[in-house]
Length: 75
Image (cartoon, rainbow, N blue to C red; front, side, top):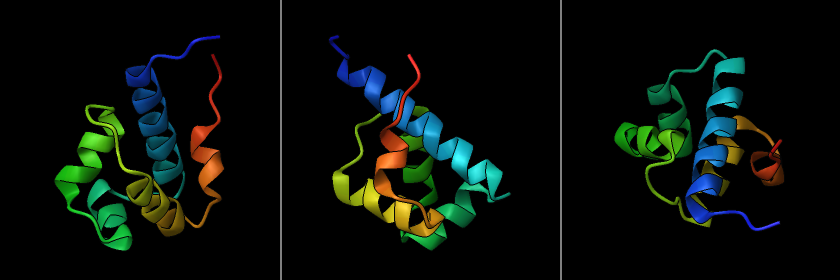
């Protein structure tokens, strides 16, 4: 199976949004916990730009989850 890169960006963003909302966090709240700008958090959640692995790791740490959980997709 071939996965398009922009599809991965969107799915990672959706997983981040899902985990964030489960914790009743705003984008700004998660961005603060992760040490990121709120605008960056929005771009990542919408899948508009590929986040660096460091950015994804910061988000996973802020959510207190294993990073691989953000890369589990249901196709």
